Image (cartoon, rainbow, N blue to C red; front, side, top):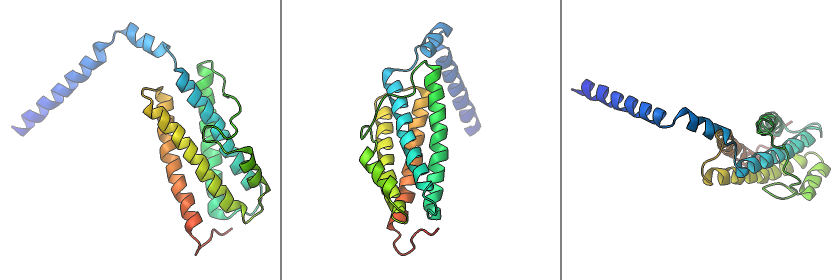
Length: 192
């Protein structure tokens, strides 16, 4: 009896899936795909490129200082690699939709750090530069998470951007936890 119930459930699910699949005509599917991204989608993509560029700039600047403590160096190297990849992918997405890659200057806006904060980091010497980098990157990541949640809370978005926003939230939340743990670990400071 249980096997018959399972088979019936599978058949109902399969028929439901086929019904949903064929609800839209090929013309409706093409029109939906050709509609392109919304203005909100484009704005989010452009701002995320600008935002990521700032994180890459901060990380490269810290790494250029020399003997950065290993655990902080590993975070900075990961941010350079991961966010540069996302910049390249998002710029390719914008280009595919004939949209410009940059939305304009973003000093202090949209979760960005100000030029004054960046200058403080640039001037900081080791070992103080490491903890300052962590504090500023936490603030920076919180801005990206807020931007991403706003996109997701706003309703339907482009599938690529929806996936990017979820990735930013998950990845950068984990990085914030790691950076906070490094800042809180007074008994075992990061070593070079």
